[in-house]
Length: 364
Image (cartoon, rainbow, N blue to C red):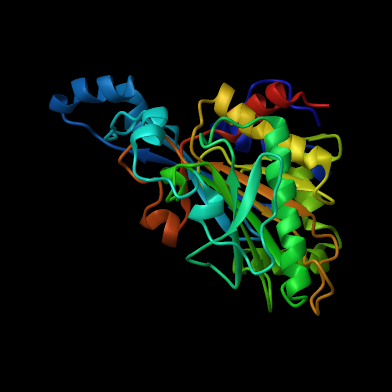
């Protein structure tokens, strides 16, 4: 079913109710969907402030809140666009000035400012690896970008960052064949958890079992496969596609996630780390940066294990997750007790994100 009109997340119940039977059944196998109204009575003295902050008093009196839960993975989201207009403390930032005048940059000269792994460094065209001095795991490296400004990346640079990380993974796995669970991570700017401003990604290779979030996803997908006799990742894509929130380009599936971790989360699925997947990663980041004004983000690449394991990974694709971490000038954290212990609260609209992705990436 092709979605023609510009829907928003507040209309998703109406939209899914009109789906053909098979598509509706698939959507309901994966998602629990409901909405409620948050009502309030503001005092007269507050009205000028509400009008200045939110624009419309009536919009605050009756607020439609959409709740979506992925029943397979138990990732849940509460959507309310008014959350984007709540008061925030901000301070001006100038990345160029901070890069030039900030504290000493150990990544400026990685050959002398960072340690190397026992198997040495991997040198790419636009980056070089280092051994992380405070490690997540036994194998934990950095991919240090030659370009220190984290937002000045090109398609060729992005390909090189991912390829260099993969070559690091090959050496780590060769050093210890039991280390077979690989993850590539990029935390861009401090809002996303980066301790250093200089552009860099991280790579880890674990033993024993995959990292907890990845293993949870594998087990959830395995249970879905057993119950429904269908691949979870294929059905997740089709469920999003049926409401206009997913498309495919050159063999890579692109999804504006309906149960995002935080704002504007994109999922990419591919059979392996292909040229198409790397192109789509670059194009999503380009859309974030140049079209949507996103400057701080988290990116992760999950791969199946790099050698045989006791557990089954059949049907598990390479997965990329990219999420907007908000305005770096804001002093307000985007994660609170709700996100840590209950469900994510999100103000961005997956339908608007999907339209941006389709227009920017060129939906096929």
